[in-house]
Length: 161
Figure 1: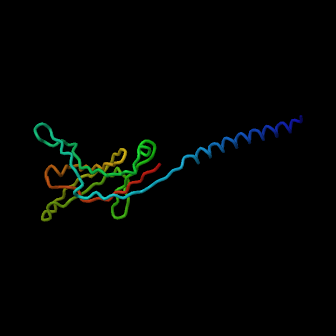
Figure 2: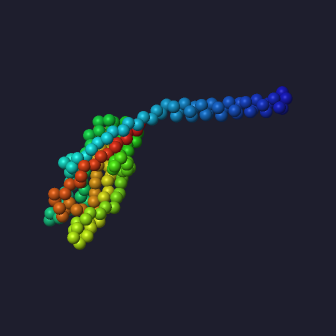
Figure 3: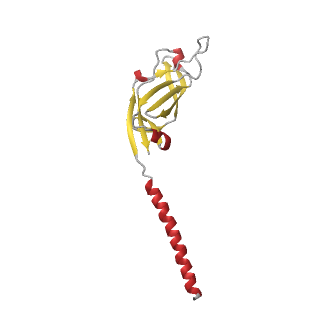
């Protein structure tokens, strides 16, 4: 055979192999269909719980936090194991991906313009059928004011599989 013909045949075989590899990669990607669904939940003031952990003398531990559990039946074991769970806090139609850390101020004495400054952290954990929203404030305001409970908050949950 002529040398040019052999080189052309090599190019055709090599190109065919590359094409087969690319087609197999494309078909693998097509097998994994991604679907996302979005849900909204409001945690009302009365839904917040407090851990209220104390030492043997009754003093509160620094690790106390507020939490609320969302019932999310759409969060399957398959999504928990192989999918993606994203939670956003929605404030004035703006979404903030959790975990979310904000530095806050509260006017405590209007006559003397005294402010209480603190940091608020909102995070989450989840399992099959539920998501727990955790809220911690840096100054643990609750220990000083037992009647304090966080206000209602809107959350958006995105489940992807």
